[in-house]
Image (cartoon, rainbow, N blue to C red; front, side, top):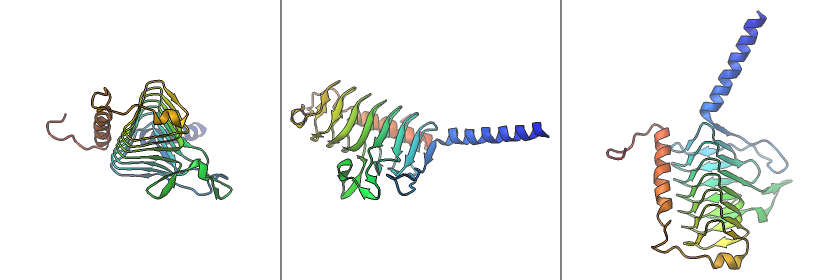
Length: 233
């Protein structure tokens, strides 16, 4: 009898673990002094969170957003995190933010504004966050931008069509639309941000983000069971 009970418990635990692994983690935050409400992620039906990705708390994922294996979108401290339509969060990427509320009071310095609303992290449409990059709030990334592998965006705002090349670090500055940050650069002064080069037709990564978005939106579609259009497979 004891063996049967132990076997039943073991099977039940394994089934729970299997359900967790197959479904990924898309769950609520916990109550804290800096997060007084229980919030659950809002995920568009056409978005996809990989089985070993995690989306927690006050997070919104737009249409055809793809969250890859081992990516973590944590809306359990800074509130809220928004990821716009057709953006992608690749392998090992982390989105997180500093406290935006403490003791029932907002902390404005840890927030950004977009479309008349306040966020911890705001990511626009068709943005690519490549492998192991980090976008840490307060942070804002404009439409059609690319955050390269192992790059960091922290306490910063990026305009539209910005390219952050791999390994670059951006802290405490605003970057105008249509600029790029060279590989490995560290940008912590506004004067340096203002002097960043403009993206021109001969810039080698000019069309990179468009290609990356093309791939990752199809991954979201495919994992959701949507077949590719004829002639595109």
